[in-house]
Every structure is written in C-alpha cells, then in structure tokens.
Image (cartoon, rainbow over all chains, first blue to last red; front, side):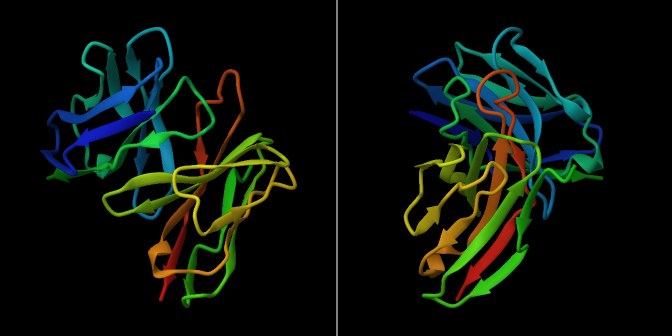
Length: 114
Length: 115
C-alpha cells in the first residue's frame, strides 16, 4: 500500500519568491512519483515525474523536484514564482507504474501575492 | 486530437436517479480510469480498466458501475444517486505498460450535484 502526505493545504508566496511545496510518501515498493497541476475548472496536467535514474527531475514551467529516498520526500520547487503559477498542486505515487491507480495527496493550493 | 473528452460538464440529479457519465479518448490508450475529487480529499480512484472487457475496482467503487466494450469509451454509471456522490469526476487514460504508461491524461471533469 502507498500513501502521500502534502504538508500545507494552502501555501502563499510573493511573486518572484521561491516556491516550495512539500510531499512525503510511503510505499512498500520502489515508487514512481508525480506532481500534477490543476488550474481552475480544468483537469490535471503532469508537471513532472520520477521513475528511475536521476533523482533531480525537471518539469514544465520551471518547476523541479528531487527524490530523496532516505527522507521519503519529493518536494516541488521553483526559484521564482509567477502569477500564472497560482493553482492546485497534487503529489502522487504509484507502485512502480502499476495501473491500479495513482494515489494522490490531498493537494496544496498555491497563492501568489503580487 | 481531442485527448480525453468527458460529458456532460455539469449535471444536477435528484436522490435515487440514475445517470451515466461519458468518457472517450482518441489516443488508443489501453488504460482508463475514473477519479472523484472532493474538497480537501484529493483525487480518489473509483474504477479502472486495462483494456476492453477488463475492469477493476479502485479505492471508492461503491455506488458506481463501469464497463469497457471498446478501447475508446469508459462510461461511469451511477445506479441510484446519493448526496454523498456530489463531487467532481475526472476520467483519465494512459498507455498500459512500457515507456509512457506512467503519464495520465485527464479530461476536464464533470461537476455532479445530487440533491
């Protein structure tokens, strides 16, 4: 069984500031890890993913995440926030890409202050 | 290339009514799934399918039925709607197995209210 914990249901940062969204997971097998973004009234879009290989993963829109096995974490970062980054962000885990579904965290609403 | 198409976008039902949420994809994906999204709960898997004729239950299957007669379509049926089924429903698809199978493509959602 796997689970995902996203720390902070709401995160507020100033435009131009560092964005850090936290995600911790538990998995009984080597995990595949994902970050998805959801803009208002839309479905989810894949930001980035970790499957195997390099632990620092770069995604779209300047986001990146680092897989840290020892900390069971997969935090999402962006050096400089933009107003267009305001959205809901979901961390998800699957057991090695298995199709019996991704397990999603509860989401973090990112607010960008002008 | 339309991707994943869900209909309707909005629906209001009375308790006890039945309805079908439609989902179609034109990417020839073997894997399709249904999620529900509730405030503060993230997305929870209802049912999924790894190919035509094959379906299985996810985390929250009670009150929902699915079938997969074609690769393209994966309808979700509410047999007797209850207020607890008020939610936003998302359909998603992906390749099954191999490179790329870990990326889900999502539809734009169906907002369902049960009164």
